[in-house]
Image (cartoon, rainbow over all chains, first blue to last red; front, top):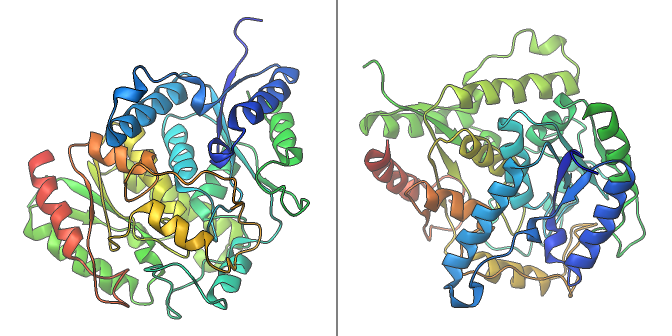
Length: 189
Length: 189
């Protein structure tokens, strides 16, 4: 099947121990909808074992940017990751594709909006050093799932940041809301 | 002074209670270096009080994207924000400017690298619901300050994600590392 629209699969999924198997699941769902799923780890790094950590990081970043440029769209896993909010590498990639004028889609496997998560964090013991969350710092509250730049880029693309309530322990891996993104992408791409 | 390079001042600074006064400080430092600092809140929203929250969010996002397009560069406050990591709206903006081919710079007011902060979080009581941090989830460790997409975009721009150790309570507001960014921007822009 040539010329299937290519979709970059952004998210902290790359940190899963079985990341490539998980990517294969996402790609199979893409194929069922007529898309080609493209995973950040798809590009091989040449001579990776010869590289210093910073060189390896630079090679991965350059590969990911090349992969994004080769795609028509992006679907991001925006589920909170060690944070009130989503993974910043994924947020970076949404902004990158948005600036290229390509539709961005995303999902989050928590139904609690950003403001609710932020308040829960503020009321907690706040274990992270230097987190800059002081009582006088405003909590963004537009009723959105994420920082407004993220939600609005997705809405401006003709979609919505889809959320789902999932079984505990399945926050990073449940694909129900990802499938909703794919169904929406069929109307956009 | 016409034609001073315009620099978009990205960061969770917008959430400070005195955000506009803080922006004025940053802009004065920009001017001293021959730049025009541009703050996300610079663009007025017309009839803001008539808008529903989601409409207001969309107007702010559109304004910020227009402001970014009007700038030659960006300096991002990448200090952790309610998280192991930086504010995702700011990460989005770094990716956006990077895709436009414009140099991106950034700073973080914590000297602890990302991996160290991630491990501290994992060992904590982890107050955030649905944070997707399970013991089997890899902790990225390239010795960098942030997710590699962020650090590497800044390095590829000819700079470095500058870090500083600051007085507790000054994580969001200390401008020492911001000034290092400005000095570096003079060699890039």
